[in-house]
Length: 176
Image (cartoon, rainbow, N blue to C red; front, side):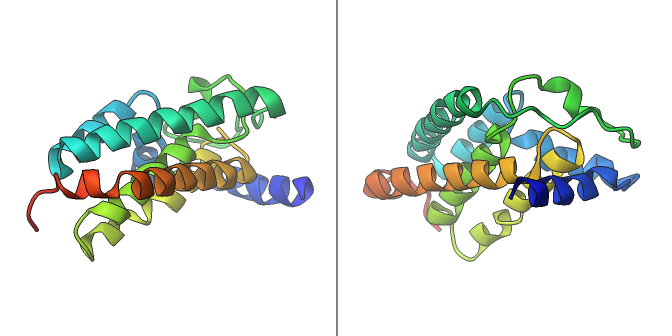
């Protein structure tokens, strides 16, 4: 399994997408520790403080799960890329690789948006999960398997909080 993970990841690591790097940096950083507070704030302004409160709880739970797992598995990150990249996201991370915290946050926030934002518009957020995952691998911060595990953790956390706090969140959503 690890060979397949490394082969797929190394294929993505070798890609050079030029100007698309600028677009890929957005989902690659949107759910990271630098921008995640702004992401939650923007979603809270759109969907209300109750949604924001559940988003914060979900995000903290996601960190509480992924952080310790990184130190259980202690999977090394990919070597810094030799290919040209406009942004050097790999230089921003030094902790172990598995699971991807950014992919977990993407999975968590997008799942909450799909659960609570107006349909069908909420589905437009869905591509952010695979875009974040691809971006994290493309910029050399993760192996592909790290991002799959991270996204699964985030989605599960969001589904749990969405189930537990559905009435609380829905009672505070703006009228559609």
